[in-house]
Image: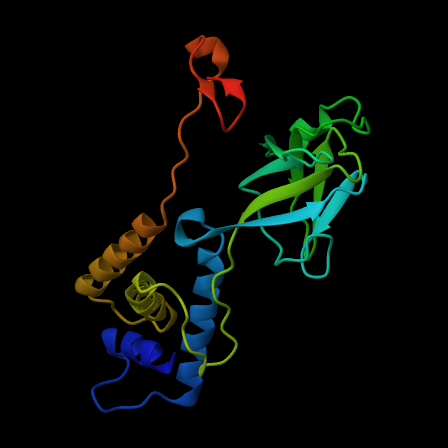
Length: 235
């Protein structure tokens, strides 16, 4: 960690070869790095992995997500995708995709929210520090398993002595983009070469993380087609 911060400080001319930054400068740079990571956490293309989190249905109308909640994981800012797994007794589990309702205004348009049946939609109220998941129809208890896809959490740094544990493409993106931020923080000019390197490293990182879902059109637009084994539908 300290090596990365030292490289960023050298890139903007805050320290020279053989010089050591003051503890207050190191702390300011570390704080800027933590804030930068927090900003990257909110962008899908800066996250290297999505994860699946699951929970058996209990018949509740809503579930919480966050540390110590029903879904005991770090609170996500959004739900990327979701599906329900129906678990029949002695049979083969069947997965059904759910649509994510992006806005409360659309969730409010559902006239009867307490109806219990096979769930088709999920609305996520991204409260803090705990979010709330509302499913419609309400999933019955005991026969479903709820699966949600959320982005993984980037490494959270607590001290300057932490060892960076991220994919290789993050290393250059971290120190170059930190250098640009430190130039703004300390009112120092940042060379165009540093800015170009920061942009290139950031683009390399985002290209490595890119996951673009296949385009699916409504059946009314494409007509009849082949059977899709994943969705149990004619596509």
